[in-house]
Length: 310
Image 1 (cartoon, one colour):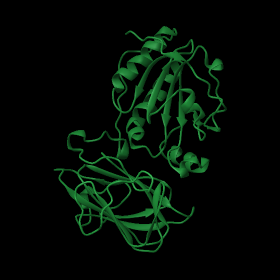
Image 2 (spheres, helix red, strand yellow):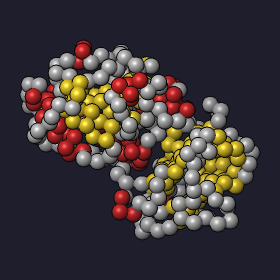
Image 3 (tube, rainbow, N blue to C red):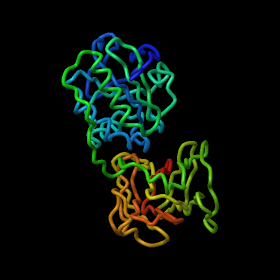
């Protein structure tokens, strides 16, 4: 396997904090193979790689691999260390995580993507990178190659087996006809009135306020509708006030989702908005066709940031 040198291991000194580890330094990691994984905890593209990243960390740590996550936030609530800590714990992320609230580590790597993997050899040189989802077999082969170069023994050539669940399951790319859609005034698009909802358009019913990165519900019984074509529907959302729980109900074409419910609702479509995070609301068994997703919040204070699909 040919792995050219792409650069040196940049500084991690700009991290604003660390979880699961004291601060790590590239010079102190000499002699170790390092994988740096840029993420933000609501990113569906990163979540769909997480089962592999966890499995690599679990398998290859004893052979000298150091896995480092870099959490560079997209949404305002992802700057809150308590939100990040709670979310990562629920995802069983136990490897070191640099908190990159100021984007200093992101900029040191000249990174532009979530997720992004950088593979660093024992001499502190970047030898490979992967931007976005997929190509997990080659990524693991790179880890094995770099560990072999570093003198690790009994690394093996077989690949990890993963059994992802919930939002970690790969997208149904063949039937994915809806794209990530932001709801705030700064990047939002596709908004239309509630009387007419073409495919990949969305609407609001009730008393809402548009902010640059989100829409916020000012009175109970507000609804968001989205005409979509996908197996999965996710919504990044949370309560305005920490510690509150806002009940909500999801329908598909006006009916309870039943067997098409996601992991964050029951078969009747009922759920509770408690933490700011990405909620998986729909997973259809098929066949996939154009449908209308609706979510109604029974209390005020709900904030919705972005839809993603799978």
